[in-house]
Image 1 (cartoon, rainbow, N blue to C red):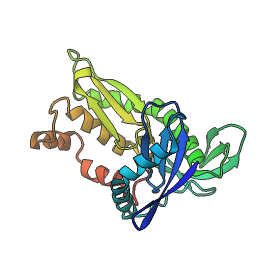
Image 2 (cartoon, helix red, strand yellow):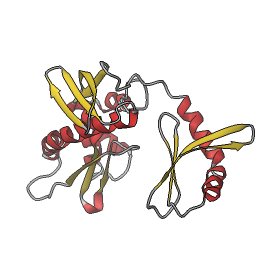
Image 3 (spheres, one colour):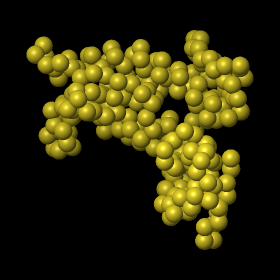
Image 4 (cartoon, one colour):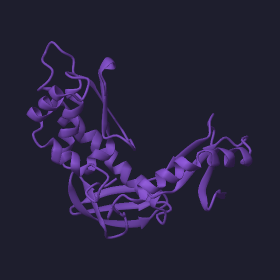
Length: 236
C-alpha cells in the first residue's frame, strides 16, 4: 500500500507492508524509497503518525542518500553482473520461479516478476550467497592460519546478507560474520575484510596497533576499503 503524507512544505511517500511484527519498522533504501512494516491490527492513523514523528530524520537521511554518486549497477538485461570480481554479461528472463546459472561469460537469471528491481536483486543475492558458501570458508581458513595456531580454536564463520556492514566479529563468542554480497568482489577484497575482523581478536578496537597489524597482513587494505565505500566503485 502506497501512502503520501504532507509534512511542512513537502510530501513524504512510503510503502506500507502488513506483517506479523511487534513494532512499526521503518527503512529507507539506497534508492530513497521508504518502506514501513506494521501488524495488521495497527491503525493507519498510528502508522502515519509514526512516520510524521520521524519526518525530520527521514528527510535528512534521504538528502544524504541523494548526495551519493549514482551507481551504474542496474541489473538490467545485457548489463554487467559481478561474481568474485569478474564481470559477466547478464541475461534476464521472466520465469515461474527464481533460477540462476553461470555459463562461460554469461549469468542467466530467471526471475518471477522480473520487472521489479527488488526481485532481480533477490535472484542475484541468491547466486552470491551460493558463491559465498563455496568460496568464503576456504579463504577464511587460509587467513585464520596466520592468527590461530594448534592451541587456539579459530572463530566460527557465518555468512549472511547484511545491508550496513561487510563483516563483523563477536570476540567473546568466537564468531566472524561476513556479508554474502562480498562474493561480488575479488578475493583480495574478501581477504581484506576477513583480516580486518581477525585483527579484532588481537586488538578489539581501531587503535594504531590494530591498523599496524592490519597493514602487516593486508598491505592494500586502504585500497580495498575505498572500493567498498558507497561510491561509483561499490556494487551495493
